[in-house]
Amino acid sequence: MIGILNYGLGNISSISNIIRHVGGESRIVSSHADIEGIEKLIIPGVGSFDHGMQGLHDGKWVELLQEMVDTESIKILGICLGMQLMCKSSEEGLLPGLGWIDAKVEKFSFQTHDDKRVPHMGWNTVDVLKTSDLFSPEQNDRFYFVHSYHVVCNDKANISSTTNYGFDVTASFQNKNVYGVQFHPEKSHRFGKELFKKFISL
Image 1 (cartoon, helix red, strand yellow):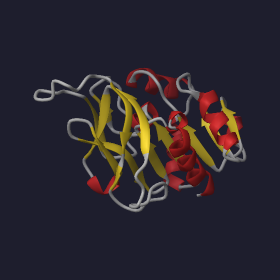
Image 2 (cartoon, one colour):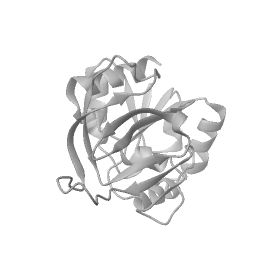
Image 3 (cartoon, one colour):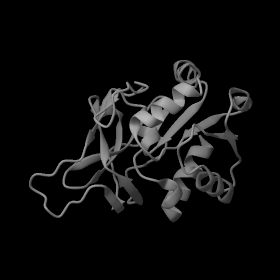
Image 4 (cartoon, one colour):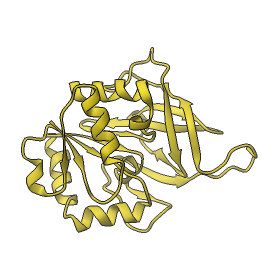
C-alpha cells in the first residue's frame, strides 16, 4: 500500500489515479492513523517552500517522517516541491527543510541564455547517471517539468539523473530509502507510469 501525504499541497488525485491505473493501491494519508499498513509514502507538492514546510509542521509530520527515514522502515518519494522539501534549505523561503539530502534549492538565474524562461515548463529528456531503484542507464525517458527552483546537491553521489535547461539540473536523487524527482511523473504519461511501477515494486 502506498500512502499519499495530504499536507495541503500537491496533485493528490492525479497521483492516486495513475497508481491505480498501473495496478497499485494507494491511500490518502491525512492523519497519523492513516500510516498504518503503509509500505511506501509519496510527498507531492505544488507551491512555495515555506508554505510546504509549514504544512508539514502544522500536521506534526516532521518528527514522524524523520523516524521513517532514520529506521528506513518506509520508502519515501518526493515529487517536485516534495523533493525540494527533502533538502536542507531553499532560496525561496526562510524555514529549514527536512535535511534528508545534503542539498540546497536555488532559483533559476540565466545570464547568458536569453531563450530560457522561468519557470522551466515542459517536456525534457533525463540523463540517467547511474543505475538506481527508479532508473537504469539505458533509459531515454521524457518527463514533464514545472518549476522555478532547482536542487543543487552537495553530495553528487545522491544524483541519479539530470536534465539540461541551460545547464545540467538535478532531475532526481536517491539516498537509501529517500527518493526525489523534480518532474511530475503523474503528468508524464507512459514514462511516468513506468516510474510508478518501479516505485510500487520496490
